[in-house]
Length: 314
Ligand SMILES: Nc1ncnc2c1ncn2[C@@H]1O[C@H](COP(=O)(O)OP(=O)(O)O)[C@@H](O)[C@H]1O
Ligand SMILES: [Mg+2]
Image 1 (cartoon, rainbow, N blue to C red):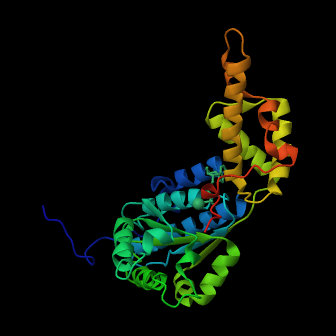
Image 2 (tube, protein in one colour; image 1 turned 60 degrees about the horizontal axis):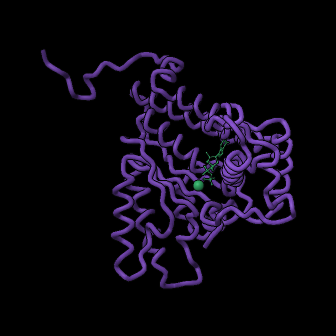
Image 3 (cartoon, rainbow, N blue to C red; image 1 turned 90 degrees about the vertical axis):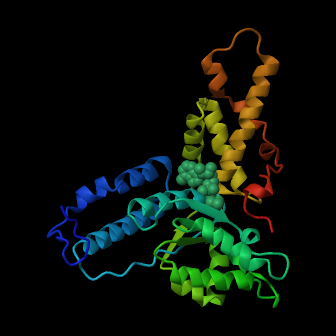
């Protein structure tokens, strides 16, 4: 038996069943996960569904021998801290892998310090090392605009930028770059670096969550850890969210995660110091009103998330 290897002699399909492809590729599964695991983010989910559709059609066209050019898949995710950018980037990596656009589908997440060296001659090797690790997957550059320091002529960031631009052009069939950060800073960054703007085809905006969405996120996070809010605690959490939002360093879902970490600490402490006799599973998993209301936010104080978790330092 001989195997035909030349492109011309391969039988091309005369039709494709997109719905079947959608299920078989595993794309359907990733999109379902995205829908279920992430509260809200409707516009983001819509954009991702559109991107998936585009890529599925592109793949189908390629399989039928229709004119084909690898689409540009570099993206920017703009939005405030804690709006789900990193989480969605991970899903995106899985999606691109299932569609065959990247070989491995892993995500390498970096910031300026991972790419730019402190001394002359250190930046190029650092940036190249990161690119090597990311090849075949997604390179996620958080707060990408810090690469560019217009006030400093001698900044090594420029060197990293030039290498990135080159690789984004030459290796776009094997590496997808996602740049993330605050919307206004990203805009300025792209205006000052048109090379990036022209290489990034997909700009996705991540809106802040509403109070109601943050409450649902809180309940989902607790549920995943086998905890829940009792009714009074739920009301307290609602108040907490509207107060916390007005404070500095508010970081959407990340502030919620941090607040819940503290609430669980208080619950444990409360149970430990006050419980007499055996506790049942319900007592061990219920977060009470007092566990939420003990936060300084209710006394007009600050409940500042550690800056390293808000993406607001530097
Ligand atoms: N829509 C959402 N539903 C549930 N959890 C979310 C949602 N968005 C973010 N989170 C959670 O909030 C935290 C911060 O999200 P992350 O993706 O790191 O935000 P960003 O990268 O925009 O700062 C993570 O623990 C993530 O799981
Ligand atoms: Mg992030």
